[in-house]
Image (cartoon, rainbow, N blue to C red; front, side, top):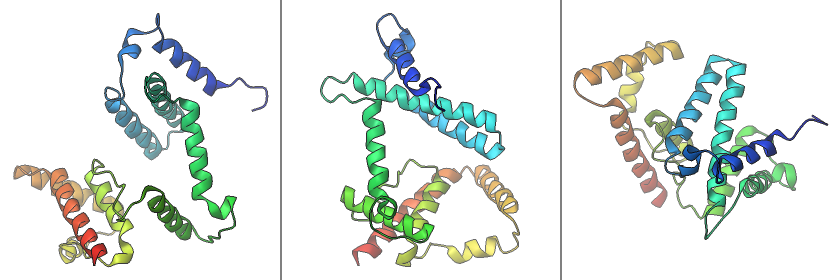
Length: 219
């Protein structure tokens, strides 16, 4: 709001103080690698706040997530060979948003959200020189998220999902997302009783599906 203090700049200054000589020993010794666990944790806590519908908690968790961005940018600023700071991070995302929304900032047209998303992926693939729709999907994503993203990206290729008919039969009597969750939980429990890792199993199947997608693209 007009007249309010620049809290974002103040956050950057606080982080600078923490990382500088005479600041906090713990903050000063952190690296990009050592902060990974906190970045992941804060992201999941933010998701939890959203799912709980707790707006106060969401505001706090977004602050914790923002801290991670500022922290990483401050560490990058200290790099002797290729330093960059939070302003470079912000500049990069501003330019990307403008570039990826030509229907807003240029003369392209996109009338539906689906058209916008398709154009986004096309522009992203061209910018990064990607050859497959699966490129850029992190393999470290949770297995179910990874599987869903692979399927969403490859919808137009007609790549069948292995065991799809068995999946349809398994959920034939399921009538809601809540019931689906209970079924998935039961499957996880049954797998665990057999000494199987359900997360690893889905991840392995997702990797196999990724290969089928790439084979279809090569054809």
